[in-house]
Amino acid sequence: MYDTRVPIIGTALIKPERRVIEKTGAVVASFRVVSNSRRYDKATEQWVDSGMFRIRVNCWRRLAEHVVASISPGDPIFVYGRIFTREWRTEQGELRVSYEIDADTVGHDLSRGVGMFTKMRYEGPNSEGSDVPAETAADALAILRDAGLSPDGDAIGGGSGDEDEAEEDDLVGAGGSRRRRGR
Image (cartoon, one colour):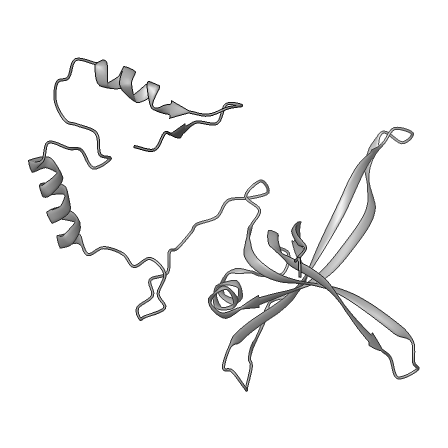
């Protein structure tokens, strides 16, 4: 009923393995991540490893394709998704438990390195967010300029400055959060 979603920060242990589910044709990629916690030992005045957590990560469909192309063993990564356990019995009858996460998001941990993002373009009825052709974007900018607006919706040209004060009055919120009051 309620999913338990968690972030995992760690290191990829193996190259993601790509598979296609025969019945549905869905693509899935699986790999393992290890998360080591470190603590400072005052007695030895050094940082020491104090525990290790290993988990299997499952990625589906488009995320699976991107993970296979992007993740290598040893990469520092983060994963966010639904965590669950899988139980089974060995041939000797011993009960075993493994931890798995169905990932919603996987990315490189940029606190431990740099990366280059390449946006993928998809066509078709299920595409998410298609890019606007350059001609259409230029036409849209011309229409905005003709209407006396900048691309971010602000009026171009002189004003008395009273608009800024009115704008401030329209922002409401508590605890430092600000949002526009509905008009």
